[in-house]
Image 1 (cartoon, one colour):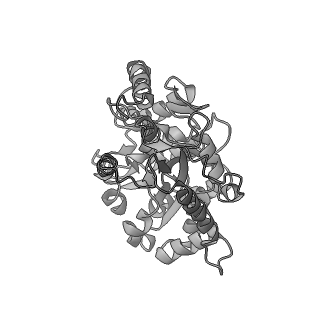
Image 2 (cartoon, helix red, strand yellow):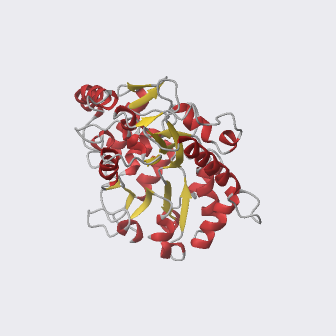
Image 3 (cartoon, rainbow, N blue to C red):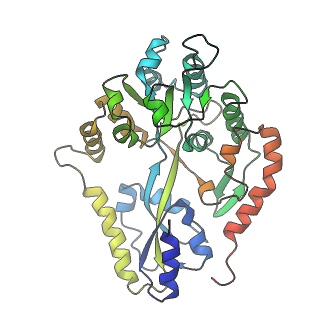
Length: 358
């Protein structure tokens, strides 16, 4: 929590580190604070390792003024969709993994599954099992699955995309399954409620499969699928992604060494696999199985990491009025888009205006 505050104290004291690791929110704020310098002068960007590790695309996407300010330290999906196999089977529905294998895991089928698994099991007029227990990441992942978000980064500039049709569709979907719509989504505890069988689906970090949901593998059974395909898009199955960044600080005492260290880290990523597994993907699958995942779920989790990703730019451009994706659960998009459009413009301006004092 004090990470950046401590960094600023080091800078003020002249004890400047060469490299700083920054989460998604550090872009572009580190540039606007005039704390960092481009890597271009020191980096061997022609080395094929950038392509071989998949880093080049992320780096190119986040250039600022045509220069490389941030090296992608880690580009990772926001999560996976876990589902309770017992709850799905009891409704007579097909295993979602089978739909995914046939290319039929779409928003429409997902909505159908939420409807079928939202149940009043004892007939007292109160819902006992919901289709989905919400996490803070689910609304963001839903928006991202369209291939667009309400804040875009295009040609080196942030853009207000709040009135996009895809963004509107995501907001309407979210509103319709929530408490103001069909009430298919439980605003509860994504760990305790999923563990207790009160929801059929939950979108969350894959580590919860062995940290929090471990015993469910042997009782109810757990499956894993990606976020479903948006039906009105380009056909790609986008997953929400965050980029953690490696920054070269202004005042770095050894920028050449910093660049070599970053390059070496790329080679480490390329070579750090179990030699008996044969590939980095198989290494990850074996690790998940060892932690308690079934083979099928482990393979699905690793496959999700290879799907197209949509970077969540709203994590870089924060609005004081609150997270727009969360607000879409409670306010119809027709009014929300109008009321929040100016706030998006203001947030972009704030995020991209250099600070007077650096």
